[in-house]
Image (cartoon, helix red, strand yellow):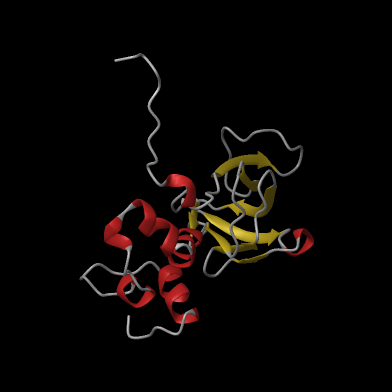
Length: 178
């Protein structure tokens, strides 16, 4: 006890630089851009998704899944004008790189139908798998159980269905049989 500080090295300096991604969704009346708290059949609505990265990492190959429910009819989107792509059949919005401190927005124009499901949910997909696969050495410095983890082992079938984006990720890495 001399009261002096003791310094310990816990080995975290090699930890991966993480991105801090957040996804927000707003639904607006297409005619005047006001928030849509209620709508009727035939109303044109804009579903606006905004993905932001407060950093410090800058992930690549980021994808968001927003499959429009059957209570809405897809009309158009502005992904191409933003340098992105959106496939209304699969609901996948491909953003590519999302630099730290940046944000991307996608506006999907829909028309409300007289019946169907109206709850729209969007989720960030795929970038997580890439982060694990591409930074395994850094993760192993934190958790010894990841020291020898391979992409092939990540793709092991354990009886739980793979998300479509996970299947695509593994196929891009040359792993098949899922």
